[in-house]
Image (cartoon, rainbow, N blue to C red; front, side):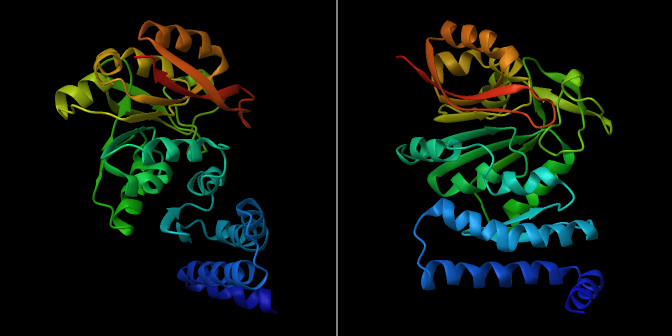
Length: 294
């Protein structure tokens, strides 16, 4: 009976789902932090995931509506039917990459962070308190819409969001949409089926950041572009040689040698900070932390 009542309320008033999520999240958090006094972050995260997030996500997917959730500091919109967006917005799918990025950014004075492949704003929002400026670049219109909603909801005013693809040249490119919001790509061979093809504007980073935005400093640059990392790096020769930012780059195994050669050309050295296998494509991929030698 209680399940029927909850389902009825959620179907008539979708906002009830967000309210229920917030209530359970708050209540369970109080129990974990104050009563049981669990100090280990990963344990707290597992408990919240089991007792709050997963059960409510199953309900949310029935509604096919965007859901606003709260995670420690930020409010995030995400689409329950998109199974990848939740884990991304919780920064729970890339190991220690967020922690390493945080350590790099917090030691920079008035840091400027470039988020290439910003998705719906997980990294952008998380690091906005530690930066004077963030350029968040997202190619897919739907992700960009969610990115802007998340920035507006959290009243973040040090982020410039740009809706375009990043490649080695300026012009137009075809973006192949995936059923998963984090797998849209300009490489059709990376996805078996595409929901749609979208023509989007494209720029090189040298053109966008140096010529159009006139940046004279870039501290950290994250690249997560689903197989287009070689094209992105080829389009930022001036940035690598003159501004020498620290790079965090997602690289697929087939591109690793070419990325290594490009980084060597610009006197960069890298270390692998995370590796995994894509659940859909079964491709091995890495996250590299690359720093200039001089």
